[in-house]
Length: 435
Ligand code: 5AD
Image (cartoon, rainbow, N blue to C red; front, side, top):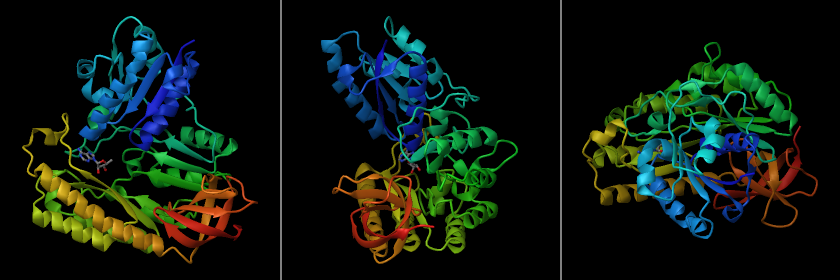
């Protein structure tokens, strides 16, 4: 029996994919190992979105290779987006890598592990039909769960490697998703997060994303439904209306902006202007007052001069996002922008990144502070490490809250009065049981 240790990097989709990989390995006769020391095979599920993510993995493979010195038969495998992105070159870049398996190769992993005992095993075939239909992901116990509803991406933004490494968009039929969600609910799950690269463009030919949300919300045990990430202009009035009328759908949307300059958005092949984006943001907030909105922003993409950058700074101040993930543009092979000469030097990118982080951090602090004094409905997720008897959970707006409550249990929905805010966490006091 082969023992496999699996480490996950990157986005939530990778975390969900690792649950699939675990299920596939187990049904192929493997057992999961808690640490690399206990493993015959060490697998890394990886990200390719920025160069830094790939460099980190090469470094980690080097570190893990020490296990090969002690036990030469140990296999090291790189899975996921970086494997798909670099393919055979990955083996050239690090001779310790024995398996290279892309996001559509996971069904064949048991065979690849077998093959890797004798030779380097490479499988980076993309399959536009692969949705891992029929495989139940192996998840840790808990009240929250991922539900992948869509794989791949058709948007083809010029900066982004995802369509190249995850292939074209395909969606899982609504009926299958409802069955899976019902099963999760029966296992004690109270909150599901629907995953897709552009989840709001979901369609199974018959049902759109609004229909999917409303159908899943009918499952009585599910108390909350989240999704990530929508594409800004796929936010139809119908979808906003569906969200507004269904309290179970979280009052938080992650709406990737990338830039607030129309010139940069055009270069990025985003399918909206800043006016379009802002209209969606305003419509969401009008329909659901108090809703939280977060975003992604790239500093230093093509066409971003000082003026364009200022437009982004101004918009961040205006939009007042709850939080934002911000990155320096990283030029990726197998994207459209790869062929273009970069227009912003590294130093300028760093300076701009720091500027937007500073602006946003101030706003995030103010938004957090404004929660103090309010009562929030919290879904209890687990026991907090903070102090004995403390629990943690999240509000509908995706705010983390810790509070003391001897009576509540994970999976309970409770009303908590926010009495303080530290960093990214709110401190609460039990206000009563939610109805
Ligand atoms: N460079 C920097 N950031 C990128 N992202 C995607 N591709 C790149 C890139 N080449 C960011 C975008 C996206 C998030 C997941 O990662 O902001 O929304």
